Length: 199
Image (cartoon, helix red, strand yellow):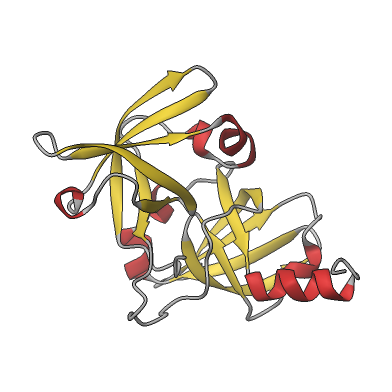
């Protein structure tokens, strides 16, 4: 489980195809503190550490074909930054909201507004998750826990403060870029219950 509070913006050292999978090498400051089999969220996608290189200060994870199809992992480029968060400690504060690291949708950034001290980002999707986005509710975008500002059937917006802008890959985000979105798990359970999905 994660919180959506990004620990660090790591750097993609290399990307390599491995059959239908993608191997990612990621550099960050806490490589010496992690271990193989550990879960780390990458742009909100929970991936397992499979290799650690302490000499060159990077670790490797694998994104399988299913992950590549349903997230923005296949759009990553060498040298770009990726939002990282290690799994939550059981005795830690839940500073963001409950995040599973399971992406629900890929949305497209359709607009960025400079608000003179903050930035408003507008995202659009196919509308299939319209009941899961509510004003002032929580949403996780590229692994970042944010509060929804505007909520419409096919789009929503969030406002990002300078610290978040500077310490995550929101600083690299441009109109047309695809982002990973995970909706609030409490909202997903509520919608499923109301729809009679539980037996």
